[in-house]
Amino acid sequence: MLLFKADNIDVVEDFARQDPYVQAGLVTSWQVRPWNIVIGAGLPAIHYD
Image 1 (tube, rainbow, N blue to C red):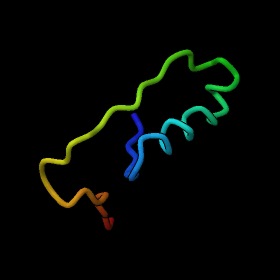
Image 2: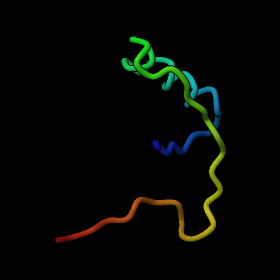
Image 3: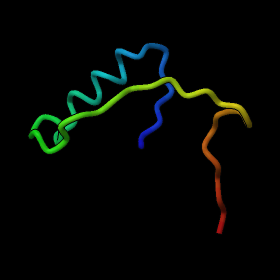
Image 4: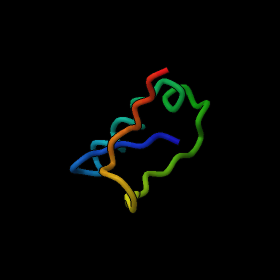
């Protein structure tokens, strides 16, 4: 699963179409779906170890 933050779904679909595994036929299907953030600001967590 990959998560993208984009203003337009076409940007994400174009990214997926350009993926080398998709272009080589190794990935035969994929879907782009909206994702609703229900908790937090939608920013990645930062872990300091």
